[in-house]
Every structure is written in structure tokens, then in C-alpha cells.
Amino acid sequence: MSRPSGSFSAPPQVHTFDGLLSDFDGTIVDSTDDVSYIEGRIPKEYGSDAVEIPGARYFMSALDDAGARWGVVTSGTRALVDGWLGVLNLAHPKVLVVAEDVELGKPDPRCYLLGRTRLGLEHSSSLVVLEDAPSGIRAGKAAGFKVIALTTTHTLAQLQEAGADWIVEDLRSISIKGVVDGQMQLEIRNAFQ
Image (tube, rainbow, N blue to C red):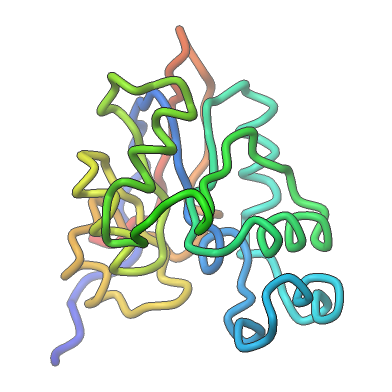
């Protein structure tokens, strides 16, 4: 397979969305080396090994500070997510969809549709999903949402093949410009082009 040509140098773009739903592991934290352990014990016993994805702390706090509608949709369990958020002292989303909430995991879109409902946006298709994995990108696209992919766990080619609308290296390339009439304005910088 040939490597896609291009670079992470697209000029800044501002897009408006009603809400934002983010995957967790690989998008907000990187705990992939720890997943082989019992999930409920990982954060307390092995939390020192996990790190936040660059830009995650600032981005999550900025979403809260701006009053944006946002949440986390993950294949992880509630205990795992709550544990990592606590150990890393990251902002807790008001909306959280976890493995226990859905029958089928990604790429089934129902997890993201449930997230939209929990945000109170059941009639909106103007949402953006943050993902790091092809199955999550496919779930977000199947739900009818735009997807920003992060190159934190998969190759650029895999993210392109899955259909991401934008691909960035990490959360340092995304910032919230504000919330106007309930809609957030996101700036996406240095996307792959």
C-alpha cells in the first residue's frame, strides 16, 4: 500500500455544529497498552501509564467554558472512562455513552445516534464526531455526521479509507471559537491535505 501524498498543512477553517461527540481511548487518552488488564482496575492500579492525547485537557475545558453541547461515545465501560477521567483529572462530559448503553458496538451508528439524543439534539444532523479508529469513523458517517479523525492510533491511509472528513494529528489542531445561538464554531487547523 502506498503512503498518501500530502501534508498536515491545510489553512485554518471554521465550521459550525450543533454538538460534538468524541470517542475516548485514542482520542482523549491513550491507554491502549493497558487494555489487556481488567478494565475496572486499570485507572487506579495502572493510571500512571496512561497519558492524555496532546491538546485534550485544553480542548475539553474550552468546550465546557464555552457552554458547548458535547459528550463522549466510547466502546469502553463506564468504570474505565470514569476512572481515566478521574486519574488524569480531565473534564467530565455531561453526556456519556458507554459499552453498557448499546447492544452493538462501532461501526454500528446507534451509539452516536444515542449520543445525539442525550445531547438533546435528536432532530439535528449538524454534529461532528472526533475519532481515531476506522470503525468509529464509519459509525459517525453512518449516523450522518461529519468526522474529524486523529492519527493517534491508526495510519493516515486507514483513516482516509474509512471516510473521515478531516484528518489531524491530535486535538491541538482543533479549537472552539465560541457558541452562538447554541451552535459551536470549531476551527480546524493543519488538517491533512
